[in-house]
Amino acid sequence: MTMQIGSIARLGSAALLLLCSLVACSDGDSGTPLVVRRDSAGVRIVEAMRPLWGDSSLWRIDPDPVVDLTLSGTGPAHEFYRAGSMKQRPDGSLAIADGSSREVRVFSETGEFQASFGGEGDGPGEFRRLRRIGNAGDTLLAFGDGRVTVVAPDLSVVRTFDVDFFTTDLHVLSGGAILPEMSRPVLPMDGLAGRVRRPEPLILFDLEGTLIDSIGEVRGPELYVLVRDGSYVGSAALWFADRSHVAALGPHILRGSSDMMQVEELDASGNLVRILRIPDYPLDLSAAKIATERSHVLDGFPPGSTSVLKTVLEAVPASGNRPAFADILVDPSGAVWLELYRGESEQDQPQEWLVLRADGIWLGTVRIPDRFTLSDITMDAVLGVWRDELDVAHPQVLQLTRN
Image 1 (tube, one colour):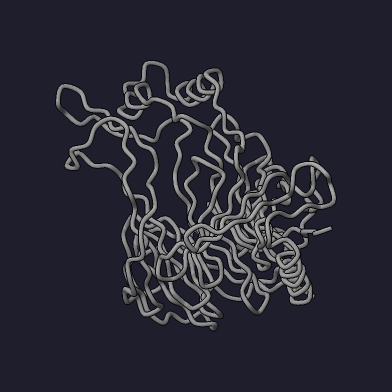
Image 2 (tube, rainbow, N blue to C red; image 1 turned 60 degrees about the horizontal axis):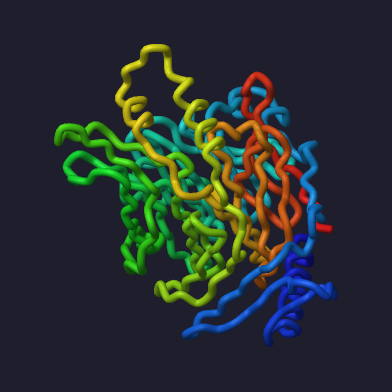
């Protein structure tokens, strides 16, 4: 069923591209077109002018789980703390990274525990910190603190290799290349002060851990480095800081800097081939919103606190705009999901994702159920972690209906 739906989605996108490829595409409305396309120096630019769905969402996520791994069995295998990255494997099984036990646990499609690997330590298949998991075909990847563990379908450890210690995520291209996503801190010896936004490299590795090539860079997060009387005090992100995000789109790479609602598509050599953009997407940031964010964070420190972090945060300025998005995911149809940014003072608001179809048409926004954090998307489900009122983690599969 998933393959049929995916094939239909791709055929529909291809047909629409043929119909709309000359200048603009409309859904019959005599007003603003849905999308405008043009070529510039060999780069395809797709500008989505308005959402196809209008003000309502035609895709729905059912809050009642299809599978809840906390409730689908008993015992330690079904107890999670600091559960994070969750993926569906090619055979339909479910893999979840538990940051507390440093284990990757694998369950059947219906939630029965099957096997696990990992644990705290420095040996092969062990982790000091477990950040993310990912699929490279039927091979499973797990990493943390700069070390990637490559695991066979039977969960035996094939090899480990090192990437940059400040890698925060891994993205796997369909050809098997691995793209680490990095975010390095600013250190005293860097000699920087004030507002800083340094570039971060884009480097591809193969599954053996061999460097393939350096293919470009992204803009790092907006930071503020506090220096007083010639001495480094500390650094922190700007209030509502822009930062870059990357994702894999088949054999290509998506990168986007959140200072605008735009993502760029690069081929595996780093050449820019397409830009998806929503022009004039509102990212206004009011003084009142900045003040609310500052108060929310600073009021969390104990009265009279003299911590270095608080000192830095009190000096940090705000970014010039609200970040457009906080993450990028790509579903099996090639649709690009952009998580709309929420500040620390806005975390009680539902998580929402803006969706661009594979051809660049802006569909609309999908709202995520309360207390649920999205980790992976299939054609008919989303995977992630829901937290109950006691903050107990429930890795879940929720049904996604694409009307």
